[in-house]
Length: 474
Image (tube, rainbow, N blue to C red; front, side):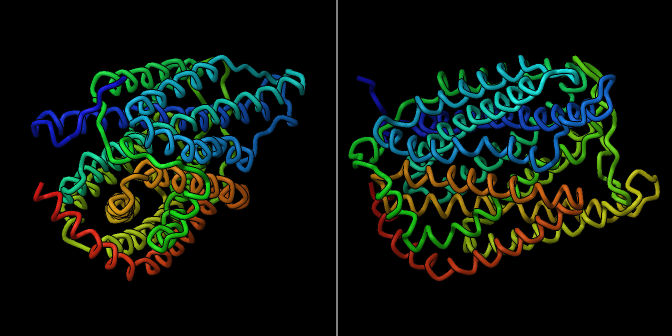
């Protein structure tokens, strides 16, 4: 029988080191997912260009943005269903083993993708098989998020029980590891694509493997209330939690922000890429951009990665600043301010999309881009504030901690699934402008949703005070 250690029995150094190793493992897991995310977009953009204008053109095999959205969003189908199952298992067996399973699933998915093959003269059956296997690999990668995310969050929630300052700090770091890791993967993945072409998928398998090793050697098993007294979990129990006012009122806002991430990570690559890899089994030809949109199909793989790297840097700086502020402000206030940042950043990007971005004296370089990066810093406060709010709610359900934190993956996955699918027609009709308009709409929905939970946030805080006092006394 596996021995699990309670955080309260460890020295401060011993208890915090595994906690931060969990964050490091999460960073590399998300970096692997980010690499896969940009590689899929670049790969499909290049294949689309090859099918349209290659040596043996085959216009029957074109890949519109709507289809790209469906393929990339299939990742979230298994993340959604799997988060229910893994939340149950985490409460019964502890989080560590499920933190390890995730990167192993991811490594298998990218290895299969590296073996896919399609040419302009391929029969229709091979094109169908190609799309089906792409769909299957995305499902397998979704299983990675479905197992590791709720496990890591349950681990963090258990370790920081009774310490709101540590929880706020670590929740911010988790979001940084998640989002900056993914964006860093986009940067690295773009360079790998330019250098290795389809072989970049094999390199990504190594990143996933490194994440699994960190979780295996760096994270120790711990005992939580959920592990010791796990209840019988079923869909009815999940329904009871989701319909509770404190969670129900968080859902619209978090779904909107998750949909925003779906637009960024599942559509932006395809819209920005000029579909011209320098290495690999094929060379695509640039796709015609939308007239008047300077960001449309304008960047190489490495340049697309650089765009996401700049975004990640601004987002990371914003999270660091917000982690200092979150313990001193109402979480709903921070989320409301961040929703305003989403709207402002999207509107500034629309302006940038219609300026001479490349020109040396472009106003986008000197004015619009710095303002946009500041807006990104502002919007970065939403997810850590929402995560702290969700962790606080988990204190009221200690036997169901894995289930509560599993809702993070569910809402993240479902939101990105909806965002990726709905954004497809916007992008097909209006390119980058369409995506950015949809992002403005999501920011408005998120802000309106946050207004619903402000009253119950005060009630939750009052109910948690005895729990915090008791933990401090122990």
